[in-house]
Length: 177
Image (cartoon, rainbow, N blue to C red; front, top):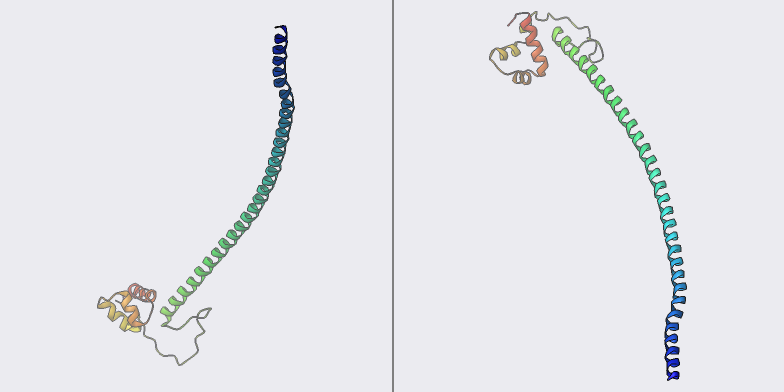
């Protein structure tokens, strides 16, 4: 019986030894896999840092490009506003000149004025111009007395609406109507 006890004890030791031995190399494999995991995580984080730096550089470049484009557009807007103001001033000046020409023609019986729009009147045989507005534009005042609209009168007489209004107003001032 003694032998059987030694044999059982030897078996138990062998079983325990078999469990202990594989766990030791497993621990070294586990340590190696932890080292590999740590190394791969370090590699991953360094890759992320490089990508982050690259992204920041691109964003800075885009920001600079945006600022340049913004300043170019602001300069363009400023140029267009100045150009628009200049065109507006030119339009007002031309409108005043045309208005002055219309007034002059209405006062002188249709002869153009000296200046940018009109040409200097040529000395012709001076005809006696009618003295009153009604005598100068009989057809216009006839249509006006009939109650026709300003637009209709302007089309019929061949003058623009502003001229017709001006002639009628000048005649009213002279109380010729």
